Image (cartoon, rainbow, N blue to C red):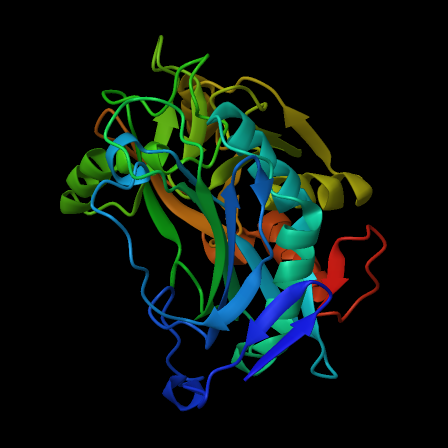
Length: 355
């Protein structure tokens, strides 16, 4: 069945797969909702987007993104309010960030009406897939790939933009154990560290596999020159509560401008908590730990939400962080953020978009 809604062609599935969703056992990124959005760019313009049944793609083995890495993505989440209405958290911010990534990767801007309006219609169509328990959501993955059929190193001329969606539970089921990386480098100034380009994550796979064999969950990356200043965790921006101050590395060419990061900073400052965005060395963190003033550490990200850090290891020194009953800052901001996402409190920031 095909219909057209505000310029987006919609072809619905003949039969939903919603019976595959077990609300009591939702694993991140394992199951995908019924539909996906697809739009193609060719001859300098975007074609009409479509919402079609979720399915496999047919691509030439010469498709350029597979060879040269011209691929970017975003992460967004949708929730349900108390009345069952779907709410998307800060999609305009993700749209703007995706176009910053696109510019750096020589890819076309995705128009607002395709990214935001397409997302709204997709979420509305598959709203039955949005779980309702605290900590659950519908994860939305917009992405764009270069689709020229050409083996040759040059910027592509054809692109495909898509959005797929997946019911999601907590990304980390427990507080995480972090290894401070001082051998490999995630990003250098002048590179693509500030983008959500696929290659950023591909380059992190070996170091991540190595630290997981050592018993850690994720890497805290340091700068590429001195391996002294902390940057971000592989899946999250990072915050440290030292004394009465919350400190997070300042944004730069090597750090992703996280939407959750920005939300957390805004909420904390509105509450009157001092937040510093500045260079932060691992030595300063160690000194705070030794002095007993390192009160909390946590990561922030769309997938991970607010993830508490249980321990931090640097140069074989394990810094065990305070127990959960002492997580006053991170627990407060986590609850405040969830109250906005699930529509339990008024959204005074204009962050929530109804689907």
